[in-house]
Length: 296
Image 1 (cartoon, rainbow, N blue to C red):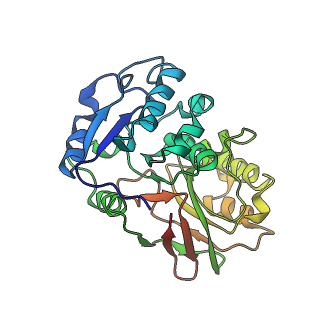
Image 2: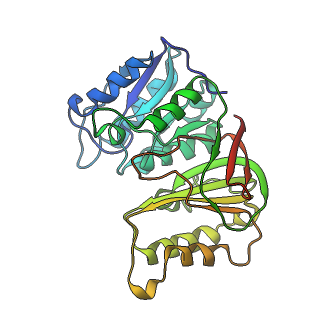
């Protein structure tokens, strides 16, 4: 179970895009301190390399260092955007497995979270970022409530969305940005979908691309053993008239399957969203659009 005591040290790292200057995360750091955590900045946090926060090895080194330090109890990602897939070959997964601690991040950071879950068995928290959620003076109260509840070791129940095919399913929860998930296809880091409840979201994608990504997902070898699917928010995703609608994409994806599904779940690139425990055992009741977290 994820449980981070007040007074714990937490690493602050940049596995994806650069921030360049500490002022970009000053509000986020104050928030961590306000909930009783002690932020420890990665030594390469402010490095830059094109759009990324330093070289691939620099970003991976900060994460490996956090896993090697027994005083560090959790790892917070500062920003998403892009770049996390590049560091996956440089992560020490055996080290992480011996010293498990949650990685908390969002969007592109999920590449790291999925890899750590698959290769190290680590449960992570997806849906919170130290930059994205602090564009205003204070972060969304619902996001903070979800995050703090789970950092305290509580198991949440989420009720959100609308039923597509109804039914019940139980399995390990995976929650991911669809574009990032598909970028892992064909690599050692793509998750085994067998026995999983998969929640996906995306932002700023054309409808025909969403349709093709969903079909590519459906063609993965382990897809036929997927337990259920949850569609989160697909924010600012539009297409031409001949593309059909977002619902058409979902309907085609579910064709010839017999799995429970929920649409419009509150997770994605929106000001308010749920923070979800990637890797936890969960139960989906698609009839009532309820997702219950059972255990890590």
